[in-house]
Length: 203
Image 1 (cartoon, rainbow, N blue to C red):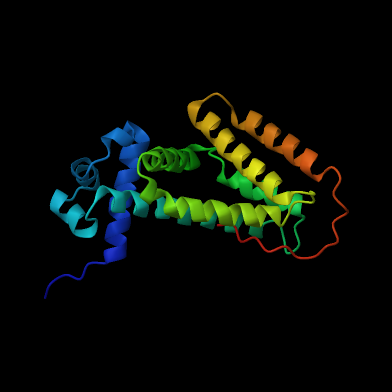
Image 2 (cartoon, rainbow, N blue to C red):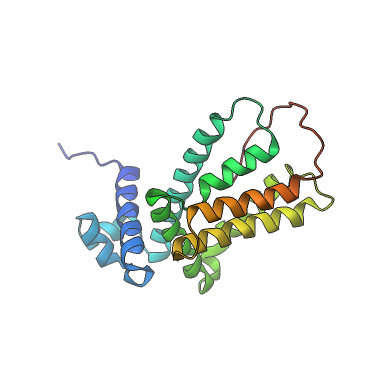
């Protein structure tokens, strides 16, 4: 009887191999052949699950996104049932920043994918939608006259800090201080927290 293969598990195995190649050797090293060698499977098997490099890259980013969501959910759960908007944002952004080895590895893949989509606009559609959702979520937490612009700025700050952390220009401590200082300014004129439950649903 033929052995039944878990298609999702196999695709994730290949995506993990892609992320290791991208994180260790750079995006230019990512190819079906190199990913197959890293995963310990044949190039034909990789092509069986991913017809093109774009498909493989998109799936790998989905894996990173899912891991980030799990990290954020776990971190927010520790805040209790009614976190303040500031604490919620600090926790979410702090969790998404590449502050340790595990998140740095995923961050390098996300950065590589961003560079990849810069020259392949069709591959960036998912990122555009995710960015719009994240801006909307953050805007709903900010006590500002123009929350959407403030949210876009905070998201840009997060991405910039991520790049500086990955490049070694900032230490984790510097990144945390910068984030805290920016949140302090955004919430300086905020009304007192009323205790209502805030549900975290970032993209």
